Image 1 (tube, chains in turn brown, red):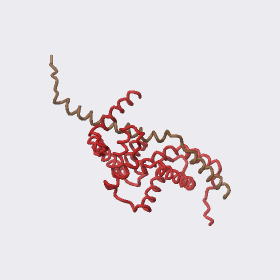
Image 2 (cartoon, chains in turn blue, green):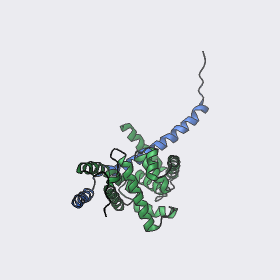
Image 3 (spheres, one colour):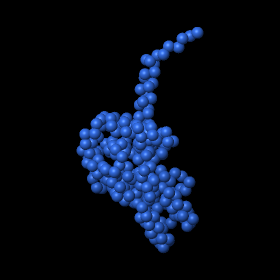
Image 4 (cartoon, rainbow over the protein chains, first blue to last red):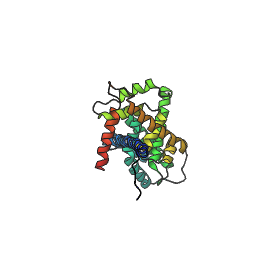
Length: 62
Length: 199
């Protein structure tokens, strides 16, 4: 039987890598959250109003 | 002026375009907010971009990526306005810090606030690349098209932005009212863990 010895030297670098990856993921999650926060806001009525006016103006001109 | 377009646009074309444009408004607002910081200025920018897109609708090919197209319009609008007003500055540290004050929102949760501050400290081209790819859901190729640069350039900007942001948040380089270093990162990590378990 081959004995499996634990080798902390080998697990350590990958653990550090995992942590770095986790941190980057955490920033990514936050970044999306920050963006989505605005995406999920109610669109101010002004936007639709402006677009509607432009539409009417365009139709009148053609 | 009689510049006649070869294919006459129908009302149905305009309606289809408008429906798609309306759906993009929330995304345009979010992108504008990341560029301007100030919500009112951001909404002005988003409205201008929306109108520019509407006016240019004849040049848009339905079925192609309208989100990327409108983002490109918004970005161009932002940079042309900026050139007019402050003659395009290399975002120096001092300017970044002045922006931070304007961005500061006492209601916002701490980590999000600090993420915004960290973002504000990045060079603008790195910030926008990271936002487009990391938050806007664009592929590197699409982000390159929006920014008018090579795909490889976007990739390197995103990776530099990630590293810099990580360092800023980790070291507490944003220096906020003596908040201790690493607090923002810890709080972000805690939140991310909570969010990932919800998923």
